[in-house]
Length: 138
Image (tube, rainbow, N blue to C red):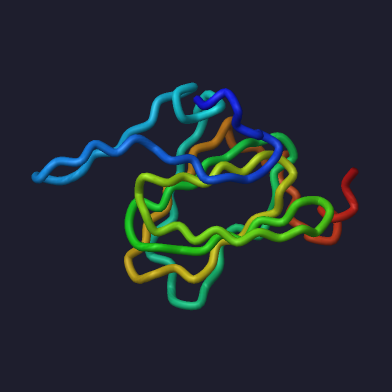
């Protein structure tokens, strides 16, 4: 893990890439590239054209999203309404999203696959699913 990472803001994490004529390899290890212990992993795939995923924030959970195949856009909004757009299309980049940031995924390419690494187990109580409620949080 880089010591100068700002864990209050979403940012791209570049994962190691070992290049080889037989094909490239990337990896991650807790605390080397990931600023939290991974408690849950899930993936999103087979998203029909024009659909979006996400549309929520987590109160305490941290997340890293890696697009393993294809591409997609991730729109992230902080509690002040400031919006950032991240276009992920390389499997050696991950997007770190801290708690209290709204996110939705859109513009999925055909056969795109995203893997999501979470700092906590699933808990419905950690989700904020109403955007207006999210914007009124301190």
